Length: 349
Ligand code: 1VU
Ligand code: MG
Figure 1 (cartoon, rainbow, N blue to C red):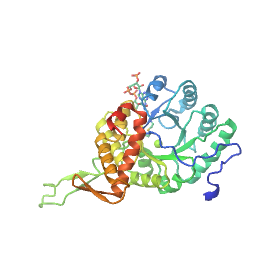
Figure 2: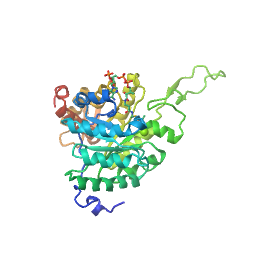
Figure 3: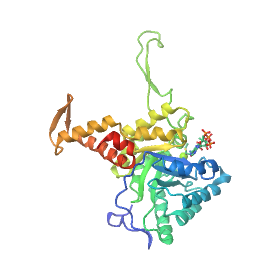
């Protein structure tokens, strides 16, 4: 780890100065597309106008023989598209793959001025971020970029989970973390075959009521991902970076997708991945605070004045701590209202 006094120094001569704070922009969904798929690529300008983040994916889900076409496709799309306020991200191939060096070199050189964040998959420890950090600084210096490209790590190996805190704090470039439940399940040898979401076999059961062990016993499905998401959220909050839920693979089950996204929202995540256009509106709905919650937050903050002491509102005690929760809700609502006129009207801030 670099000592505090050198943490914010550029890692290459001529590289832009690292950021001191991660910009908190609306980030409700990271919409994945395959830049080698002409149909999907043609939809990018329209989709970019509807999402907070659009991501050109180069890693898993791109066939081996299409890796180079995807990289070039992303360069072409980025050069000809005006993304407006929407952030442009990419997911490069993993650091042990034969493609990642060309991914980073080509993208920073060709479209570094348009790229906000590079998502790095299968990050296992701070050493992976340090490698990317130095290489990006060299490439940024050579390309003459005037702002640093940020880095987002996917937590999708057991080793990455064990090292989650050092990953979150490994560089001032660290923008956030996403949970990658499918690779993580494989790495942990979990006996599941799904991409995120719950599992009906993971449950607790009430005690027996008679000698018949099957009689009158209710079960409740438990959340396979609770521990992991909570750990990720704490690591992110401690390092002032942003946590995201990753993919939900059952595209047709829009109801369970909404549940998974909402669990992540309630635990502190700022957004989730959308893999298909149908998941965009789900993320938008879930990760935008409910207008009733915003109205309540406003009432509490107004009643609390300078934020100290305690008041009763609708029979409930509100104090400094609940007021701080309400301020979190209001800050998010204000940021979203600036981007979305419909939400601005609904929130009436
Ligand atoms: O109506 P059209 O035929 O013109 O278009 C199709 C389709 O091309 C388009 N579409 C998309 N457009 C933009 N972005 C997308 N992500 C996207 N997905 C589909 O929408 C129209 C309707 O599509 P569909 O319902 O017929 O669906 P398809 O069978 O064409 O595609 C489904 C998959 C899941 C294959 C597709 O959505 C996809 O490839 N999504 C991205 C997958 C991905 O990025 N995976 C990696 C992240 S997850 C991970 O790493 C761990 C598991
Ligand atoms: Mg993965």
